[in-house]
Length: 363
Image 1 (cartoon, rainbow, N blue to C red):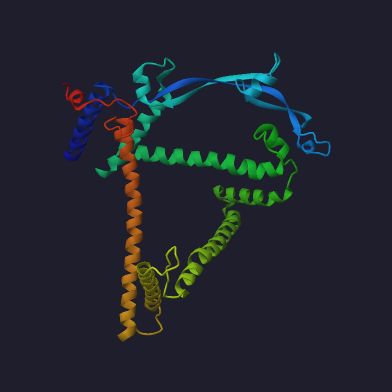
Image 2: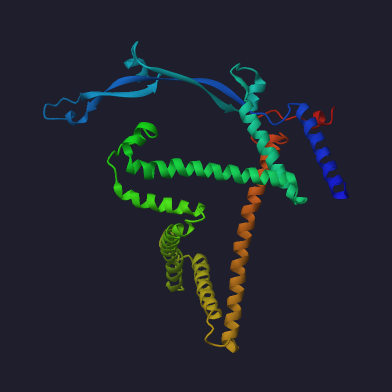
């Protein structure tokens, strides 16, 4: 065993010992509590009111019944108590609602208990987070396992989401709506088939030919259609959102008059708004000059082009800083998850009783 492996095992051992001590000292750590609640729904027949009779020539303001409608309503609701009878179908099930740990510590509600499913999920998320963080030391088997699991679970999740959110309602629901309503989507109301959706179905089948060694060329038709359509849609979006907005922001007057509520000119706001507009105009012209290669960048043109480089670098730096801050925010969120939800070291929302420092030290 080399020196790096020894250091890794020592660090893992120390961390495991600290986690074990934290789990059995004070109020523990990494537990989720939930309250058991029972839900009951009853199927009743509710009269449908004919709104067309309200305010008619007879002066009768009451609504007449236009028929009966079968609906599922909560058993303890007003409609459930009024319209149910002995033969009304009743469905009930139990649900567990997550509650703060302090409600369990209070001991006032016997329906609150440890939620093993959510707790196992919490520990799994924490351990996988630490496994991903282990890459900061070096590439290791723990990180590779976590990476493979995350990629596999993500791919499987989005495949299921794509099937139920796209293929079932937008393809099968258009081609065989009756079958989809009877099996998958009972709330589907449009039952007329649209045979035009056979075209995207054919494109989808051709795309799957990518998996066949002999049929890969057929998938190129679908890929070409996807790439071409996406490029055209994105081009229109970029032209409207970036290019035209940039042109509109450039051609407005440099002098930007800002008025107060009483109609007088606000000199301070007007000055800085005009400076902002002038800076925008200079930046656009300088950047365009930098990318204009028909004239050699010497003399005045070279100085303007150099100014354009400064504008470009500031823009790229701001964009990079924004991206880094976004990643830092994700990192901070993971640390909050570890220290708040898993280790119970901090409790900013007061959701539980946190063990004191004396408890952690064994005092």
